[in-house]
Amino acid sequence: MNSIELIKRFSDVNGVSGFEDEVAQLAKEIIGNDYPVCEDKIRNLYINNIEKEKRTKPVVMLDAHSDEVGFMVQSIEPNGLLKFIALGGWSNQQIPAHKVRVLNRDGEYVEGIISSIPPHFTSKADAGKVTDMKDMFIDVGTTSYEETVNDFKIGVGAPVVPDVICTYNEKSRMFLGKAFDDRVGCAVIVDVMKELKDKELDVTLTGVLSTQEEEGCRGAVVATQKVMPDVAIVLEGPPADDNFRGAYRSQGALRKGAQVRHIDPTMIANPRLVRFIQKIAMENNIKIQETVRESGGTNASKIHLENGGIPTIVIGIPVRYTHSHYGFISYDDYIETVKLVKAIAENITKDIIDSF
Ligand SMILES: [Zn+2]
Image (tube, rainbow, N blue to C red; front, side):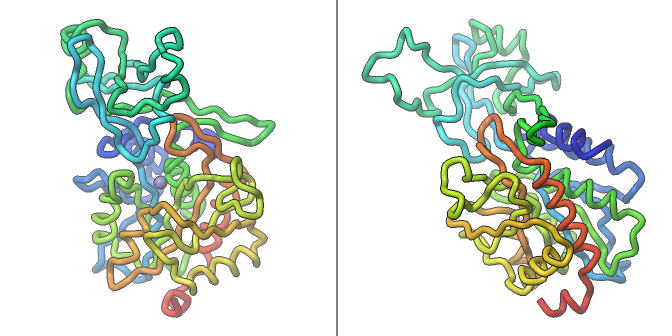
């Protein structure tokens, strides 16, 4: 499978926090027999995790979270509409009037729309106001509680995923789809590890597709305690701001290369690791963009505090309109990110890790 197809498939699979099964399944299918693969009970997927007693080299963990933002059904109204809560961070204005998929008790996805009030019934005073999520519903096209529950087999606790199919535009080299945060990170891990499969490295690369990041980086805590890495690289689909901020102030732009994060409110990156990555990028002619973030946080927030303090970096492919139904990412940023992670893996040694 080529990288374009890989990104599209990772974007399309359903996997809100706690329900990442399809993502793990897809990764297993693509990895095939290239590496040993295993899972744990929180549904983290491990690619090439070597037991501690059998290790001969330092371990570099590549982490990407497998979950995406979505919703969960909280209750069902007498008229068949579904009341719901958010999984992950949503802004009210991005939620209504979009298509979703609701997982029913038979394991099938039922199409629905997030409700909104037509202009005909909106008073002048209310026009332009953003509805609160508490006042929205998911409509699966039914008119009674019984129809929703008995005919469509939808129950309380059903996960809800944005209903979007990813497309790639060859002219702009952009992908338009859902869940690039963080399926693009999952794609990078699979691509890098497959490309380095027969390469003799000075480190062991272990890939982790970790669950429930959007609900508090929960999978990554379990994964880090299992892998106990010496260095961690968190691959992310961070928010782009180049469509509303000036070019010089932008902290995440499309087509500017792999994004290297110095800081966010949850972690200050190990500066020696940052310098090593800057050097690798320069020597290998890899385009990077650097970011100093005032908001946000990633799995790195938990990972870097484990195992006596793990040198950790967040490398990302900026996503426009993240945490909504649709986003854009640049294929060129993806290619630079894969090149950068490969070059790090090929050049990092025990001595370099000791110097961090
Ligand atoms: Zn993310």
